[in-house]
Image (cartoon, rainbow, N blue to C red; front, side):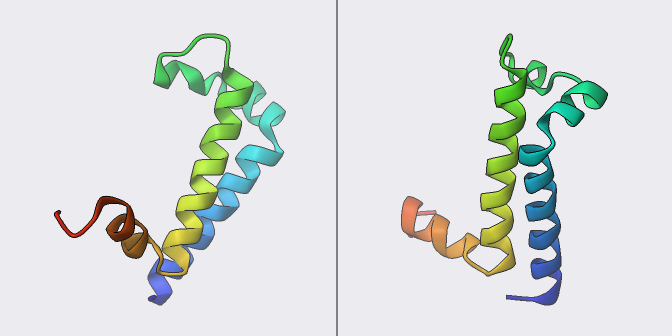
Amino acid sequence: MTLTGFIIGAVMMVVGFVCVRKTDLLLRYLGDISVLFGAMNASWLSWKIVGVILLLLGFMIAFGLFQAFFYLTLGPHL
């Protein structure tokens, strides 16, 4: 775990939290994010899913669990 990794992970966690907490505000000002994924009429849920993914990835990066997670899930074959 490095200081840079912790800062990047913390920023990702904050952005993810804002995506989950302020979904209506982001939807109003930034629009529908589900267009990027090819979905229709799932804009509120799309902001929540992106926020949760950012929270989890940010946590793993901040505390040095990112490499261990992918090593355990994908195995040493990569």
